[in-house]
Amino acid sequence: MPERSGVSARGEWKSQSFVIETHDAYPRKMVFDVFGADRLARFNIQVGQEVMVSFDIDAHEYNGRWFNNVRAFDVRLVDPATIGMAGAQEVAAPTSVIAAGAQPADAPFPPAQDSSNADDDLPF
Image (cartoon, rainbow, N blue to C red):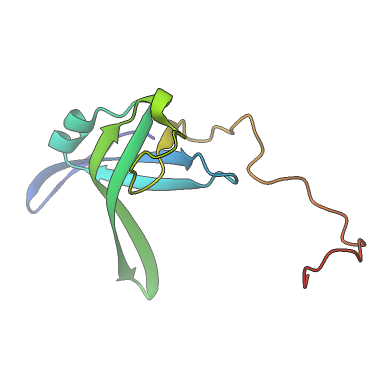
């Protein structure tokens, strides 16, 4: 997403949001922020890269509503050839950086099943 910048009581600031998608059976997307010009330059995140993101989650209240903050403190490139290798030690699954508003080629959920099938044992 576009970089944002401004001036606060502490001086100039820069921030940018990124959308990532997991490689799970049912891929999930998440938005996270990188705060600070130094981190933006160091991480140098580009659309289409495979990355491993370490982040902090925090929440704050504003005008009676609560908002989550997901801020990355470390972003590392991942070799696409190593994704899915058995025995690899990973803290979390690598994710792909996707363009804001872009839709993946594969649908994130399987097609809906006919609910009239009485043979399944699901409670819904």
